[in-house]
Image (cartoon, rainbow, N blue to C red; front, side, top):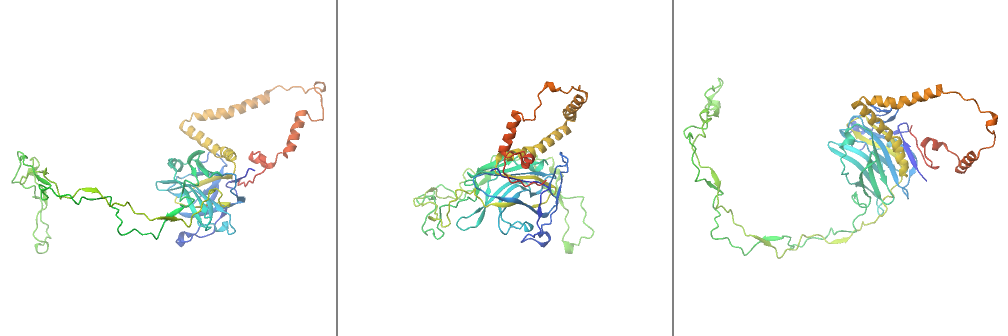
Length: 480
């Protein structure tokens, strides 16, 4: 049976009235503002979403599902739309699927409220993240531990900076495989058993914490050769550099001119006190006589590397015959070992929440959708996000190439004009005479067959008309 939930802006969202623990009182309250409104640069008039409105505030809002989602033999697909209308400096736009517990109170939704899955974009500075985290229950202790998917290798920067609406999708399958998609393109994938950190299952063996390295354990792979002897001609006192005996003093070198001289234009300050300040001396400046000369002052031979330099002698290194390798504690059975081969079967969740801090306002959310059918999710994506994408693309193209407005107008208006002209100017035909057809009150064969098929299917329900779905059973929570 197909199952899906659709949450949009007009749904019964519940604001949290709680305070964040371990935080300064001034910013502890979840008092960030939310609004239901159109995007500032909306391409679809009347299309509203849930908008985070405050900067530097804690925000928490959530919505109860009609019934919990239980992980069994069907996949989980969650998708929703985000538009960073003002870009994003530091903040998140991730969603939490809140764990079904007797204590769950959406009015007191905080960061420590238990969740089953956390998924969505997050960014601070130049660190662009796309979270997929799930809380795994230890079957031995009952405690929960967060498991993080590896960071996507794809470049995510565009999704945070282009100010367009993007569709974020997480697909979890009963075989433990998962996919993370942005705009219906896979940006990350893996398996819950092998691609999460820390791993779902602990190692079967661990290092013995009580094992200690023996005092005589030799971890040195190399040692100095004990039989090596310093050569008799090895001069440890030879300098590393010596004067270049082949060097010649350049012509024009001014031996008697100093490199720096006192500034002849300098004047001793009137308040200079030689008893307190000492004898006044003019500040030093480069000697003008040296500007055109190759050098000034006593000439010295330049230094060069000493070919006879060998430095301090050390015995050469050889393989250590006593080397035992790097010591490691012995392995023992892990007392906390367990093997969960079905981590997909997570804790049921019964609500959807946004618990966020952001330094940027006007983050637009829309069309939260949860289902166990991939095709249904794709249809909703095409009808919702696909429409936004097409509108954004068409208007952006028209802004760059104004002549496209003519094409758009002709494409829409011309067919309407032709239809009106055809309908208004067409010739009226005479009603058919009774002799031209046989009138009967009995249903025609094809109509009768259609009615029988409709009766067998139970007739078209109201949900089919709203969702366009042929599935007779589903749970739908509409926000509009």
